Image 1: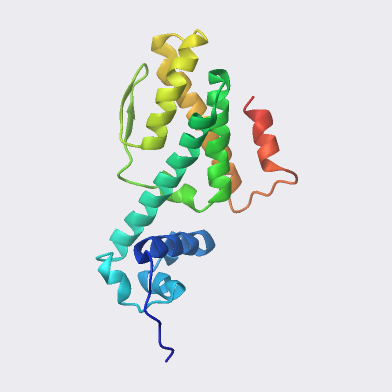
Image 2: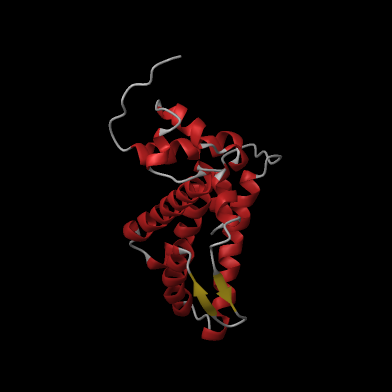
Length: 190
């Protein structure tokens, strides 16, 4: 049996990254604390110092994905000088994130704890940071373009659905695009 060396550094973060790699390579059904520990070069018992069980580990990986997705969008907000381009740039960042982390799409779309509640004319509530950021940034831009208050929620949903659809198409196992996918996305999100 190979002796594992004492681990230095941030094991919890390394386990989360190993979990994400497992999900990206094999899907969430293959997520395993034991396998993540092996990828990090630690004993199978070491993760117990950070996660009670597989469910808590899976939740930590999902939270990491949400934080990274939020970071992608925040970078666009921070770097954007032209508010008119902001909605497009956030849409492109949305698709680019799931292009970079394709298995993360199912983690986001299948989370039971994400809540986005809307009515025909209003976004009631949301606990999902990337969506909240988009609403906060898109609202003023859409209003400046003449979108009426009672049409705002619908327009935000249309835009979110478009980029969600583009990301969803990209991550489909049977979808293959000849050419530069992000160039195509740029043409669609004009």
